[in-house]
Image 1: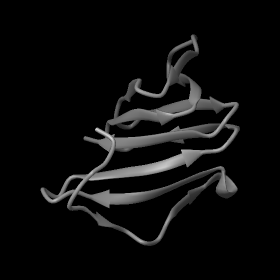
Image 2: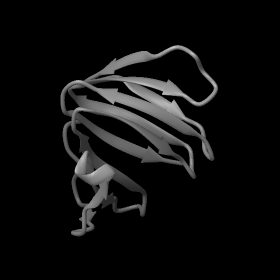
Image 3: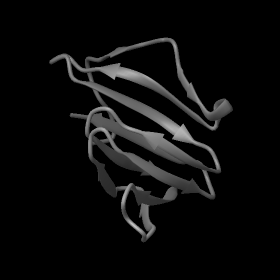
Image 4: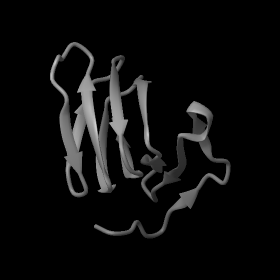
Length: 103
């Protein structure tokens, strides 16, 4: 799927890590919320509340989930799951475009 139809977009951006990650919240017709964003080249650590599925749309990243010792690489068309109430480290050498699915 290359686009979401019939959505509402929250105009205010979610800006993290001094602008190294910027996303917008998208609300689908059924009330489901997602964020669509970009992580610029950086190494960052994110904490989660709800479980997340990070879907890569462009670029690539390396990810290490909390409790794991190995880094895994993900690119466009690939996804990784993050448990709720957890964290993950992400390292990007190029802009990484993503959709974050919650729940």
